[in-house]
Length: 121
Image 1 (cartoon, helix red, strand yellow):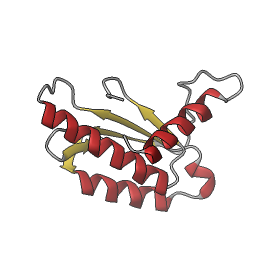
Image 2 (tube, one colour; image 1 turned 180 degrees about the vertical axis):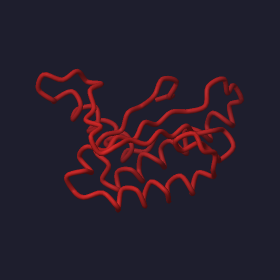
Image 3 (cartoon, helix red, strand yellow; image 1 turned 60 degrees about the horizontal axis):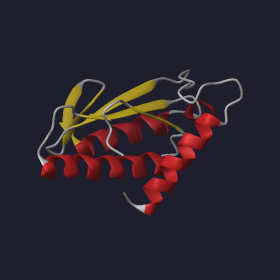
Image 4 (cartoon, one colour; image 1 turned 120 degrees about the horizontal axis):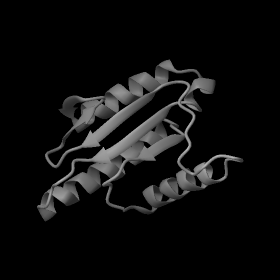
């Protein structure tokens, strides 16, 4: 994992843990959410719809641009990886895509990223 992704991931965990009276997994979902599951083949799903990785990023970019600044603080992106993948090359591909997605979410200024079960870190 790149140093930038490690820093982003650390900031996300720290931000979640610092919320007063909230558990580390509590997210404010008032502006909606998106669910991304990355696959081993350069594709994934965004809210259940299968598409190439780049299309996922593009659609997330369009969604976040449509939100106001206040709404951006209440928008959650849940990110996971396809379960049951055992091929080392495929697992590495999903990890690379996960790192790229986290970088792009940082650029989009998405503040709430929920890592779904099964994400290798």
